[in-house]
Image (cartoon, rainbow, N blue to C red; front, side, top):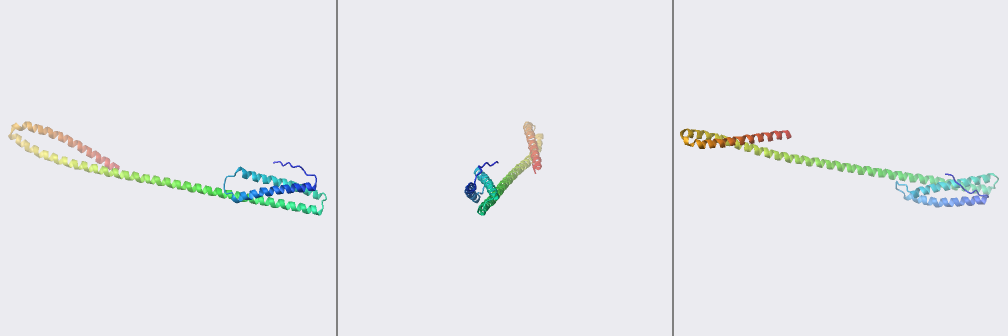
Length: 228
């Protein structure tokens, strides 16, 4: 960025210009010191950048004035003039060094704050991940408990089916004994043949029902062993 300044025509004008720039730098440096002492954010605001660029511009202007004063002294200035130039050069050097030191401190604070923000974000992500894993584990436990309850219910159904099958088998054997006795009676009493025929039809129907129940029980047992 080019710096345009009106070139003073005398030593007094150069000194006046130097003191003016030094006063402006003191004001800007005070603001910059307060900024560095309180700044802890990673966001660089526009005002912060403006202060830095303003100080850099004033330092360049003061350096230009000092160079003009140096040229004046080299052309035959007195010892007092040389001493005044040395004093202004020391002020410029002190201001420049302090500015670079403060700027480095500000950058370090911003980097530190950025690391803290990254760590907090990482810690937050880790907690969210752990919460997600915990939720998944709870879901699996609930599903496992549901499967356990379903298995218990299936066991009860199979037990009831087996009990029903046993009762039907017992009934079949009972009907078989009754049938043999009725056959003996029918051989002696032909008049009861009609009754015996009805009983046989009832027996055939019971046999069909027993077969269906046995098939259903067999199918349930097969499904149960597949889910074990």
